[in-house]
Image (cartoon, rainbow, N blue to C red; front, side, top):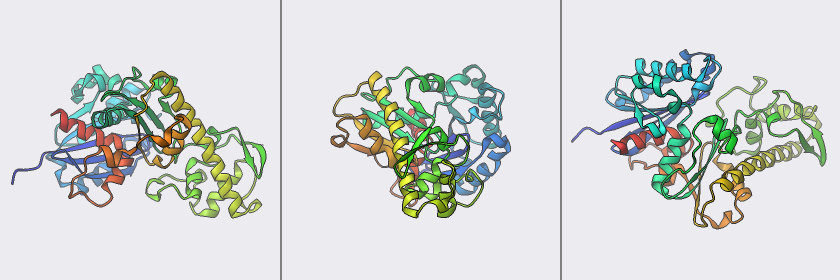
Length: 357
């Protein structure tokens, strides 16, 4: 029996590393590890060790790499971040490495000094190109732990001319809002509590994870980082963090009060993301048959965001990247489609490198 052709896709972020094993063009396994890269490049070592233990194919595989981790303040600038991360992986991995560089194609690590800008924070483009290649036309709504990508897809292409984070922040295609790490003081300056508007404390008292932990929507598998106060993540501690945002304690409300308060935060974040989606659609109009393609650990918000962006959202096809774009192997481990949904860029680079040969 011929040996399977293996590609491992890597998405190296500032807070997580995500990886995907593709064999003969099909997704076999997907994994995610917490990796606070701002604390040092040595944080990559346990991640790589875990990957070696998980996949025997590591030594024979080709490796497709994308990243956003160059943005962390460990590095003096993005160029040094790209080159440092690339060097760390080049030293740790045995198989051929190719770095996703968008319009510049696939690059070797030796080519990065001249093309680091194309590699920096290009993971969104990999996901968008893979989704466009498979689905044709739609709006990609990838809501992660920290950021949201809102990208128009048309006729198998990604029509936006934006490439850098700065360009995408200007266009609305990148919103620094996620369902785990976003400080709540970045979501709203005023919020209703028991029907009365309150100013929000501009302190790092609580994050979006507290909101979605209370609403029951955040999968604990993606709740990987310490709480804002480094306390526990049980319901009373979560309520206490939310209470601090308006100068209260958890004992000042009932369980129903704090659930209602969490849902108010949810509605405000959805409204913000829907507004960004409308900006994207204004610049890149899509036809009536365009689908809505969700990805990320915050995909549970995608339908609400789409409803605020499209007047006819309910009539459109609602697709999931992990189920409708990623090609899972029949022998894939249990839950691989759901993990592919969350780790879309790693799946995308592995799949694209396999397809591109």
